[in-house]
Amino acid sequence: MEKSPIKGKKENSNYSLKVILLNDYISFLAGIFPLVILGITIFTQLFGFFPDLKRGRPPLGTEAIPFFIQFGLIAIVIGAIIIALRVVKIKKILEQDIEVDGKVTKVWKYRDSWRIYFTYRYKNMEFDNSILTVYNKKTKVLMPNKKIRVIINPEDPLKATIKEVFR
Image 1 (cartoon, rainbow, N blue to C red):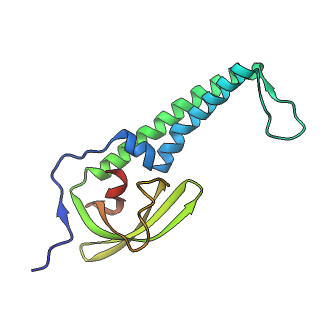
Image 2 (tube, one colour):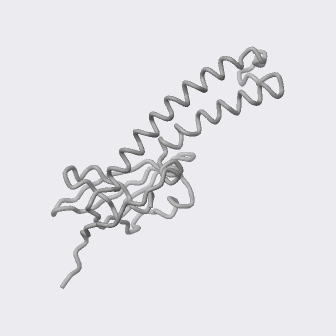
Image 3 (cartoon, rainbow, N blue to C red):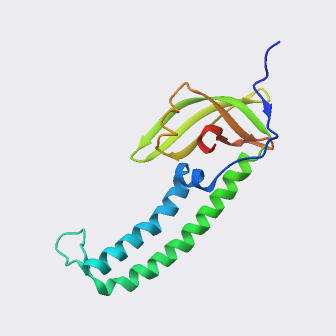
């Protein structure tokens, strides 16, 4: 008798905010952007200037610090909202009861982003999907033709993610 590729998952979902921030590209950017602004502010405060990256203009001086602080606070608020929405969305998928076998069909890498295309079967239908992740040690092993476990929403099988990325 053949083993079914669908498996009900009853244990508690053990997702972590750290894993989501390090592997979900949108959450990663939303967390890094305020840190970059903070770095610019600290650099400007310590050295009295921040070099302008366009030629022909003078560097930004300490008079730009209030702008960077205000921009940083706005970036923190927007980043926190984006991260919260992404964590809720990913957590909702990870807490689903259905895991199916899948296969990576192709990957696309651009700088630090890594889009993983995958396919899986559920209720005699085949689905194609993709997720955008950060290219790192955990995700770079997901190469074409690699077998994976896919967690899906049984009410909407197109809402799915790769288990190995977030666990």
